[in-house]
Image 1 (tube, rainbow over the protein chains, first blue to last red):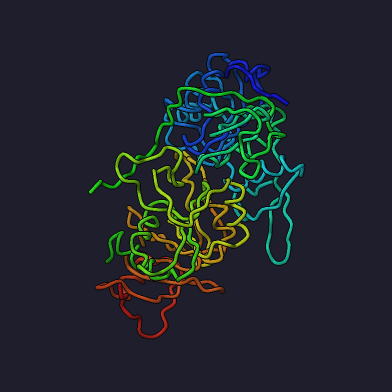
Image 2 (cartoon, each protein chain N blue to C red):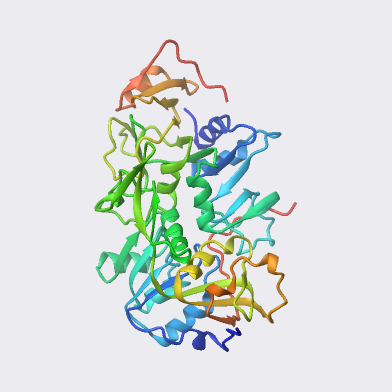
Length: 232
Length: 218
C-alpha cells in the first residue's frame, strides 16, 4: 500500500488536456502549491477546475490562468483576480458559480457514493433555474448532483505512505472533500512519514481516498489578508 | 444617524448568551468588537472554525489560520476545526443561532439580494446563499439608502436574489426594523436624532409604524 511518488511531476502523471480537476484550498490557504507548479511545467490545457476559489493573479490557480490552461472554473467565489476577470469578460474562460455549501456537499456526496443531494441553498434565485426541486415538510430543496472528478489534488500537513492525511487548522477546508471526490487523488504533504507514525485516531482522511502521495517542498504559504494587532 | 460602528454596536445587543454566530464580511465583522464581556458566544467561520479569536499579534500570523474573509486570525480556548462540508452541514442543520450579513437590497417579504449586480463583474455568492437559506435568525446590517440616495428597503428586490423570505431584522444607520411574516418592515427603533418621517422617506417598501417609536439605546 505504499503510494509514495518521488515528485510533483511524477504525481501528476496521466493528467491530460480537457480533463476535470479538483483542487483543494480556501483562498490561498491549503492549496497544493507544488502540484500547481508541476501542472504549469507540464502545460496541460483546456482544464475544468473545481475549486472554491481561483487564486490571485500571481499565485495559486491564478498562475494556471496566466498560462491559459483553464477552460472552465467551478467555484463559489472568484474575486481578487484581474486576469480571471479579463478572461471571463473576453469569453476565453467559462465560470460556473455555485453556493459554497452546495459545492462542498456535492463533493462529499461523490466521496460517500451518493449521486445527488437536496439543499435549500439557492431556492427562489436564478441558480435554481432548470433544476429539479422537491418539498420536504414545508421547505423547498434543490436537487444537486455529485461531482465526478478525473484527478483531485490536495494539500495536507502530514501524511503517511498509505495516504492517510492530517490537515492543519483552517487549511483543511475543501481538501478532504476534493480528495474524496477524485477518481484518482494526489496528495502533497509538508511532512511524509512511514506507516505507523501517525496516530490512527488523529487521521482526518483515510488513505483509501488517496492514490499518490509525495513530500512537497518550498511552501510559500502566501497570506492574502495579513491582519495583526500590535505587540504591546 | 449611526456610523458603521454604531450599527455594529446596536446589532451586538441581539447576541445572547450561549449563541453560535456567523458574521459576514464588512459591518457584521465589527459586531465581534461589541459583544458584551461575560457573554459566552462562539463565532463560526464557514471555512472551518468555531471559536474565532482576535487578530494575531504581529509576527505570529499563520497562513494556515484564516477566517472566511481570508484574514489571519487566532483560536480561543474551546475552538474546533472542521472541513467545509461539516461547516455548511451545521449551518444547514440550523445549529448556528444567528447570522449577521450585509445586503444591497431587502424586500418587505424578507428577500435579500447581496451577491450580483448584472453587467458588473460577478465575484460569486460564496457561502451567502447557503447561510440565508438555512439560518434560523438572520439580521441584515446595511445602509438605509445606496450611494445614489435610493432606498435599499423595497417592495421587491430589483437585483438577483440571494434568498427568499429569510431576513428577520434589519439595522441601518437610521432604524431597527423587523420583517413581519405577512410582509412589511415594522419600525422598532429610531437612531438618535432621526425622525420617523426621515425613515419613512428613506423606505420604499411598506413601513409599519405602530404607536410611539423609541430612540435606540446603544
